[in-house]
Length: 129
Image (cartoon, rainbow, N blue to C red; front, side):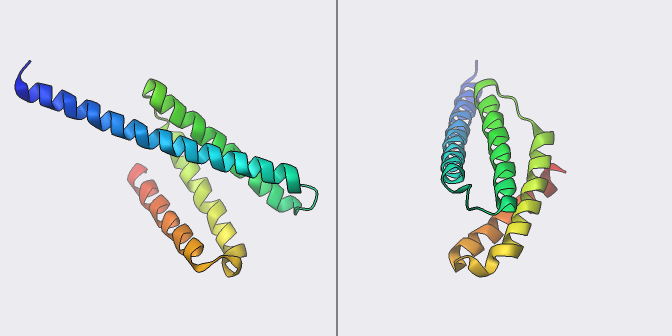
């Protein structure tokens, strides 16, 4: 094996390691959000608006799918692009609805971050489509 090939192999391994570290961090973040939402639903479902509960359940299902997808990527190197496109579309739609109903109640920084995330989702969708 040539020196250049060895360097490329090492770079490739390092890139995979860094990508998996990011995926694991994202998996932990999604898991934490999932657990917090579950706890919130358990504690407040008796006083929450039924429409908000349905919305939260949809988000929770998406989180489960995202966690499963990340697990498959990390463990097996498999990536479900079709599901990713559908998830992006669904997240765009749900978040747009959330923003439309709650923008006036959100603090400025959260609103800006949410709008920024929406733009990133649109870019990802354009890239994958």
